[in-house]
Length: 317
Length: 259
Image 1 (cartoon, each protein chain N blue to C red):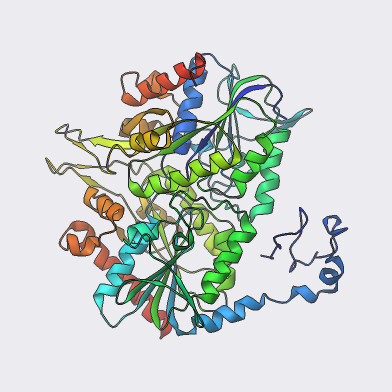
Image 2 (image 1 turned 135 degrees about the vertical axis):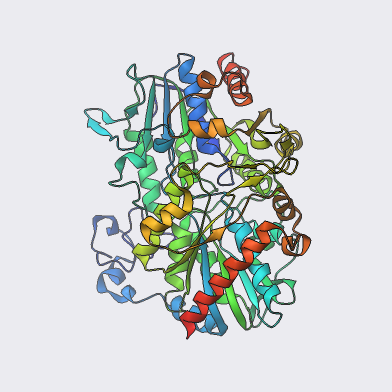
């Protein structure tokens, strides 16, 4: 993992690479001599700043999935609400690291809010007394605005989010990510490397085409040394609201998440059913836990949250 | 670059998991069934799905005198496929790359693959508006006859990201051929009650507001879902399904110059 500056020549090996300043792509780069001298090889100073900034955050959890549209943002918001509702004394923050497709402002019902900047940094937007959110969505002028950025600019934004948001004292910081195993993920892991990352909750759906990408994400976690707290299967069953028939809309032809977890010896946190009302709540930004406290999805969610809390408590003790 | 390709169609969506790869593969298969010569390029480097969907996993790409030779689905070589999935040692291998490396891989895909003569080149993309998309747009600027099909699901949370993709297309000057709405309803196999799991009508209203042609709604159909992994065309296996009707219609319009 070596940082490539935004204005670097093509094929730049990265300032922290062993080859920095020494490969053919470095010829003609104004910083070639600095790189070759090894002065840039030290760790990014931001890592230390982020460590200090997040020293009041007890637990940091990444929400990952190789696949898009499996419900990372929905799961993040549900976990946020559930953790915050469990105990009013517990403070939860959500950081939306999906720069090109930020969904948290809508899902949490705080679209159109503004982020304020003060001496102590950016103030996040409060969804409730003990649940706060930071997302690039708050910085865009209109919902049509596209963030057409290459990697280095996205990395700069994530660095800013991690180092400049004034979260106050937090018990949990949930970091929602875009699909894939690229810039956002590498940067988040790299910048948090000294700040004590508890691990990752990996979200999947049951069908093979999703599991295929999720296995890649698990491989990524192994490569970069992120602990997997567990796998959560979303959209596992659909119950017809009319006749109560259960159907598998996304059939688990290869055994679904449970088979994958036993193959890779990972904990399965639980399965969330496909509930049309949940999808509607996400669109409208309503708290599903309050709307339907006794639905199967909420019951499953509570037990998932218990497992995550138990893992985090074990980490800190 | 791509001198022998008559038409390039990009399949885009700001949102992940809405069915870009399903639409790309079904579109390519439908065109192939019609007798066209088709290429399918998968530029989703971190999550390539096309090899699995078309049942081409474990195939490999060979280097020929004129460049990489794509993997062909059929013996007549009417559908050629290129994906990073063919270059990975194991299906679980992760491609942990930052932008610049992804950019040069995509450039290679665009420049070094020997497609031969093609009627259509379909390009399947990852979600977002970042490195992969910018690179493809920059490189396709010189290619005439290039357009984009946007895929969405009906929920607001997906529409919101697709609106960003429309802005991206307009900023980069690529014509939008139309919007396909996927996963618009689910018919219970027992009682035939149709549930709009992910809401309904969002794609149509987005098309109306943005003044983009609406290409149709594809319902959630587990039978179509099961075709993934087999490389079979919905138009051939399930000719009566709504999915097959939507794709037939899109291909009709592409063929007669309506799009």
